[in-house]
Length: 111
Length: 115
Image 1 (tube, rainbow over the protein chains, first blue to last red):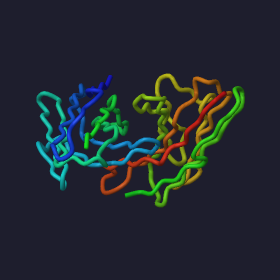
Image 2: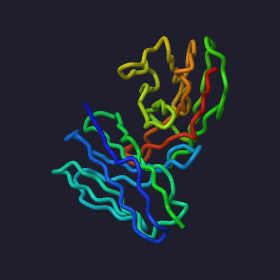
Image 3: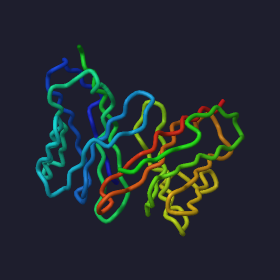
Image 4: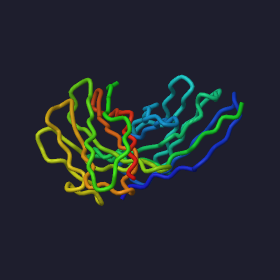
């Protein structure tokens, strides 16, 4: 079955870049997503990338996809304290609507 | 994006009772999903609900425990039946929306505590 793994915790200083990594196992993944969850809140869709793309940039966010290694990363430039949250990677399997979520990475931004 | 609302936002229930969670979307969507997020955990898909057909449940979830209704393209309910403390979780409604339905959005969640 599908499996999506992330490191549990990342700490960065305000103004630095953050890189959150994700690995997945399903080679038929079509879309890969990044979500943000702040304490006590629902999930906010940050960005997503189609599996035939290598990179997608959206303001401070850059998504890199290495399909050969099944590795996805989210880079947040100029990280702010408001970026402190849990970030979930998710993948959507080809031909199937199910989206499988990673374990989540808690990002702590130190002022 | 789709705007999704859920009711109630939170509840405290006694074991053995049932709670029905409502999900309302501001536009018509074909596919709606119900997820569970246990404390400190990731999201687990409970079932997929398409309008006009029976919900499709994931392994480990059954209709008797989590009956779902999908009466139209903007609304769904999830009932958590015969609750036990292990059902204490956040329950999230989700929809696929947008061109090609690539984007998946989530409601704010219903925080359920079973005592």
